[in-house]
Length: 67
Image 1 (spheres, one colour):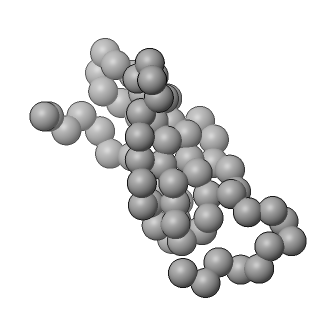
Image 2: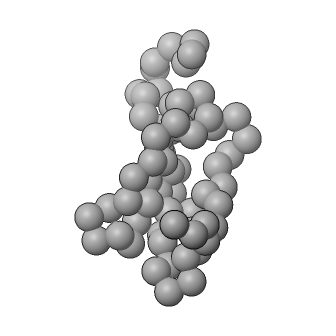
């Protein structure tokens, strides 16, 4: 294995789990501390990760995450 890039997360996100999509073009990270999931585009040619979107995993009226 060779490290190609580092997945950048928001400060305090607390990345916990990560996986590639079935076709290997997307990389998903579950962030424990801020209750979000971040999707990245993975460039297979140069091994880079680019943030596509970060979504909340809790509804707006949910209590604060107390990990």
